[in-house]
Length: 243
Image (cartoon, rainbow, N blue to C red; front, side, top):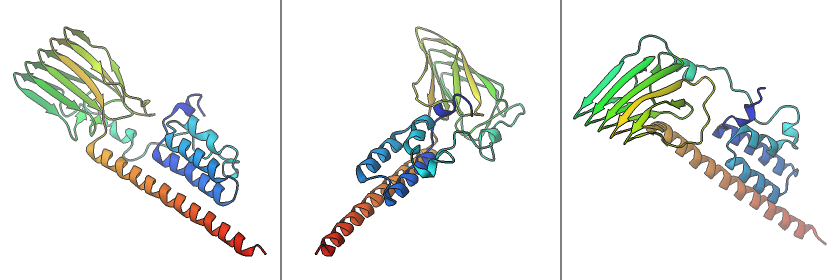
């Protein structure tokens, strides 16, 4: 295990594994309702493995092996390893003069991509792209225009551009780079214009995450309802059994 493993971002599946252990512990009487609800809330608020691991450390389910794996599985099909494909790239430059350009969808980003916008705008969308190398350079020149670079969450971005009477900015985000993800170096020059980098999921990924969160919320409500019903039934039985 590496020293920085606890700082890796936890996925929804990791949080659900911890929540399942908590539900089992409640059913077995190892946690009372107040402890269960407190730990469950901490579970769904946790962002890293380091925040998740202590939640089940004192429970038998986590005794011999951690409830959450602190190592990433080998990269397989559809992972970052599958998106670093080598080659020359399908497009190596784009120009917008009093107009606009777009590079988006399924395309291969070359080791260096040059773009120029003058009184115009451009969009370089890497969310569904493959990469010719583990490190690529996006060079942007914006003069009285703007260029937007969109990268998926988990990709490391290094900004090395210069803005004069303009902007060369990366929108704030709270996600650490994924292991094996490509590194994108954004360089260039903006004069009376702007170059902006934004981290965004694809529309399909946003919908998947929304549905996943909705289902997790329904599962939590159902679990709480069943547990409260179980407690009411137990109290009713105890009253009936009392002479």
